[in-house]
Length: 291
Image 1 (tube, helix red, strand yellow):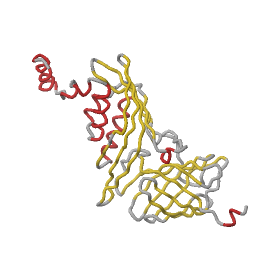
Image 2: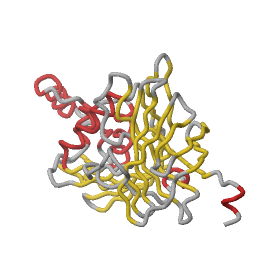
Image 3: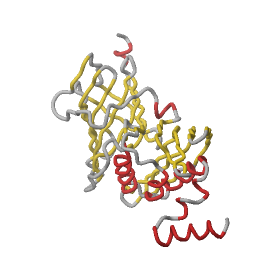
Image 4: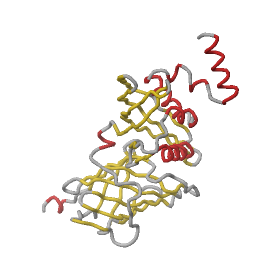
């Protein structure tokens, strides 16, 4: 580095308040910029993420659990909410491949998104194995992320379910709304995939019933085709949320996700914030098998 370059960097830091990472070597090539973004995400470093991401108002990006972000403002708020709710984040990169042509670059990446959420006196650790692709552009000598798309890389997490938009209407009272409704009544065994936690529920003809976890209760709000949506409430540890499943063709299995809407007095949880992954299996009686 020449004395002139060093002088310019010092001026930027002292008088303009711009961190040296904004003009340093970490963003000088697309791979360095991507790795710096991932590290800043894990460190909850929103100012650095802001520098490394384009702020165009019409950029569209997609995250898991049906989340869609248009423009920087929506994405920034989503990250603020996540940083507020997660006690700790770890994001190790498993694999990263980058291609570049002129001022454009694109990448394919595999990583683990590890969230730690405070539950009473304990930290709950959830590991989400992710895939991510994205496009970067070099602007004024720095690489910035334009748009990205993420999904689960584990079939057991992302198997055949699709989430409606976050602002889609949900009905939480009365009889579940349905078209060609499958019968979900009966006994089910439930597996929370990440924690390998198993418990049971018995639902009535409206898809309502208790389950054997912290005095829990499920309420079905909608069944449309194979899409099954509802809410859950646990009086034992004072929390509640929602769930969304995709039923198998015969209605004996269901896979999908669950999320929090309230934990104790905390209610500022982002819509459909991912809590975990479900795998439901219906417990068939001998009379069911004889039909």
